[in-house]
Image (cartoon, rainbow, N blue to C red; front, top):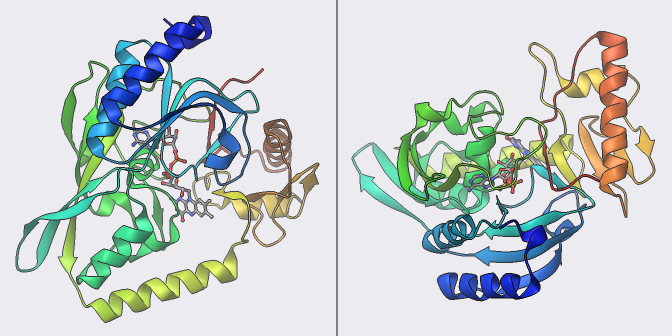
Length: 321
Ligand SMILES: Cc1cc2nc3c(=O)[nH]c(=O)nc-3n(C[C@H](O)[C@H](O)[C@H](O)COP(=O)(O)OP(=O)(O)OC[C@H]3O[C@@H](n4cnc5c(N)ncnc54)[C@H](O)[C@@H]3O)c2cc1C
């Protein structure tokens, strides 16, 4: 039964069952703007944070069996919640255990839960002399979110190291998918929603397996420091989703936005950064309505001037009324 039509007592019963299944607290009417890097969005009816792969699996399985609409999020750095929010359950995935499963002379296979953040994985791998995922230090998201968009930076991307991933399918079964099955390409995969995210998506990534190679710790750490310096120099700090639009083939979204006169363009509380035109910034109390307006204005302007359709890199999540 969809949650919009659920009686309060059914919602309560579901929340109790979910707490029993996961051992975690279920919260009501949670403001989603806290859980995405642009700091925009309305309420989720129900909200839970899970910290182990088994809890993530349990939460999704129960939501599916109970026919409660659900959404799994990682660190909220590639999505924008709508002002109307999510009618259903938002599961924030913080399952962040990782370990070396197989170690050989020159390479190793790592099992990484999907809520793990790139920063902690990159630092640990470098510390132990395994690389090269130093580029991941620039990505503020989770490994699960990275499978969805084939995250990458500084010439590296997930596709370079991904061996396989565990997914929970619509039948509530776990499957091991080899990397090729995800059809990873520039900021896309079979899991990626182009524009708008479907609630209760068919596939949830619970963990990934990656292959790393023996490398020099000092060199890996120096590389990460360099990537961090480059980012500070080239990208604005603040409330943002990072790159708003994908780069069209052979061009860059930032260059097109700038050439269209949109670098520094502001609409109410949102602005294309004067430092990097493809970075949409929340200047204070932006709403999704502001975001929607400026995105379609930018797409229309670039289309009129250059005949290029800019596709969003970020996903829009939630009801849009
Ligand atoms: C300042 C800044 C810089 C950035 N730089 C880069 C960069 O250099 N390169 C780059 O590629 N990206 C970059 N990003 C974008 C973002 O960090 C990546 O896309 C990242 O992979 C998103 O991960 P996340 O955990 O935040 O995903 P979220 O934003 O939480 O989720 C994104 C989508 O994936 C889905 N999802 C999340 N976890 C799972 C899961 N376990 N199973 C199934 N679906 C899931 C969500 O439902 C949502 O639809 C940047 C973002 C910011 C804010």
